[in-house]
Length: 189
Image (cartoon, rainbow, N blue to C red; front, side, top):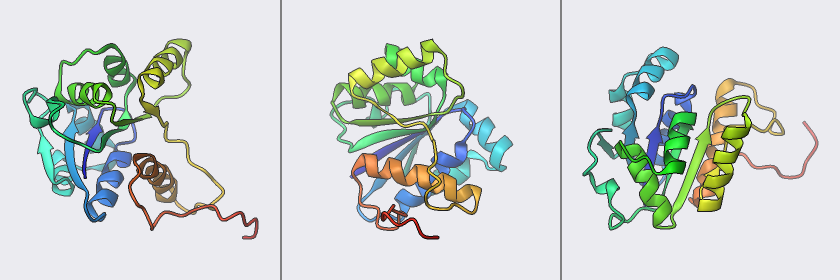
């Protein structure tokens, strides 16, 4: 199954990186990466990583300007797409069909073809315009999944929090994820 991973310039590029790592380990999943220029800059500032580190994890990497790439067509069959993290700018462009780069065009195609589009919107707090845009996207079929970690698994590190969010997104895609920590109803430590 083919999954598109979009990474934008919002803080939290570790979310996209970790998603690529986990999907790379998942048998039967082929990833297609699209990263904005802002995402490249943010990844360097937050993680000290260049685009090449992300490309190495993906099966295929597509330049953001390549509007004629396979991902830009509904005839290119995908299981879905995750934008992790998703900036307010990209979220708004997706909602309004402003397809001026490959990431936004791929998301638009996923929506029009009624495939799964998961947006890990990274902002806080949200104002009413953000919430209305998210509502419009949800009405179009997108899944709005801000990276809000759960604490019931007794996380010990920041990466535990990242993994919780990424595992939930993999679940939302309907991809088997046996390594995910799950709530078992136990209240014991």
